[in-house]
Image (tube, rainbow, N blue to C red):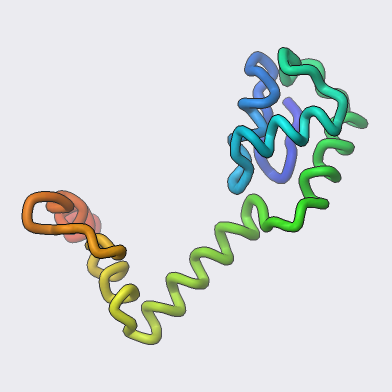
Length: 119
């Protein structure tokens, strides 16, 4: 089972969908990467050799976007900074409520309950 950017690629799945499981790569970006690496649309994870896997990983890392653990760390740092500043969005994150102005009168009731039970 090959690993690309810290994500395992299952051998029985279609390669395009498997690469889309990498955090920060969607289906369209995955198709582009597979085409550049020379894989067909019906290639599976079992067709990825060590050298082709390294080639695919190099192509993915050459994109200007942050991927995988780097992207997760970047997003968590942004949320943590908002919480430290006690900004409105940070307080909403801390309380487990919707951040982007969604209504809470009829929706978003279960999320805070789960947070309170988790403590």
